[in-house]
Length: 220
Image (cartoon, rainbow, N blue to C red; front, side, top):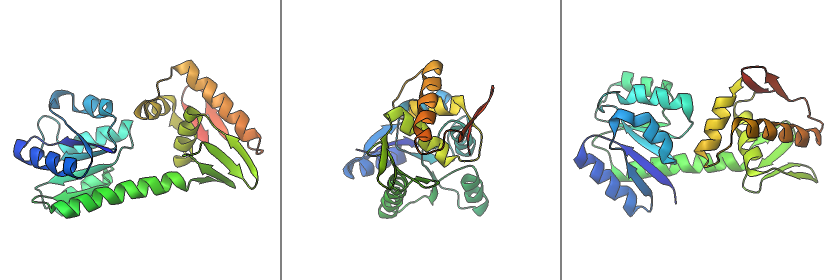
């Protein structure tokens, strides 16, 4: 069951959203502590966030910007603002979609479904160079050659593939593992990277994960 967090300070709207989502077979959590909004969102392990722009303390757009420093969790902005500038800012900060109040419940549910379909499709169709990546089976494949990755190795490799050519810090990898309910320490991350390199060497790609000392890694 997919879990959705509602970040909305209007209790009437929050309750409406909660009932709508529960009746659509989603697990729902409502953020109630706006003093520690970012921490609570990351701790929730939700699959998607419905985020209002007008929330107490840190506004929704600023909160979205902070979320994107830590997580790629899908975010739909839900707001009474109809300004194209607000929509453009939200999208530029990393929102996956934007819907205005009063929202059409059917349209909102369809947008949520589309985001989950897109994510699931991406997960099932990842490729790297001539390798086929099958996360649901934990397999790297080229032709008839297959190698099994552990869950942590696959999470790390997916993150590197999705950020190919860009520097990925160790903190980012640790956060991504944490967001996937996997808890490893710094030494364990080093071991997983080493094992992943060894498995890539099976396909002749032993030098594709480049270490930037004191910074992180780049998948070439």
